[in-house]
Length: 201
Image 1: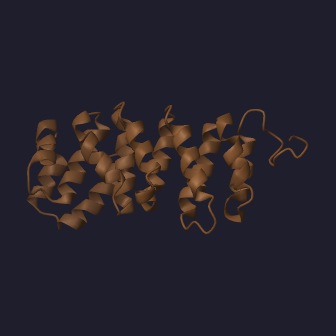
Image 2: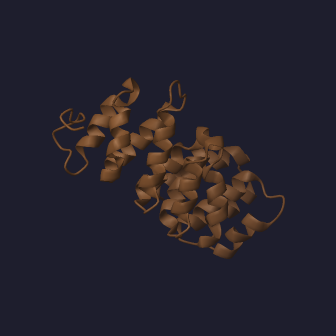
């Protein structure tokens, strides 16, 4: 069993209290039965999450809407599982949805996993969304340092020169400076500098 599926199954079995309904949903190989859980009224959250995850990793796009909702959930393990499934779903709408969640200031407390998903997807939306999110996190006394750090690290992993200005700004923030140095070093043409070139105006 995939390690992510194993972890999710153990977590949701405890949440569901076990029982035959959980075992049936965890064991079924019928994608239509899983998809029905996503549309039937009255289904518990654990059942919807399990069905959406299993469909998502199988590439069944009927899971898309449910996984996007879970990606922005207040419970981090649900967000992480949804991101894992969305990265494997292969739906062209995924990057756009993740970018919208990452840049939504009303939901910034839950932006960590959308940011990480954007890095994994390496989609056209990824770099602009991470730049926008990081720019907002560089405001004085911003409390979302984990989101900011994920953006810095992600922009370094993506290695896009468009990120150079915002990463240079991040050097002035002690909590981000070390990661920003590393990220700048991964951008083509930036190796060996680590700090902005003071000779340039």
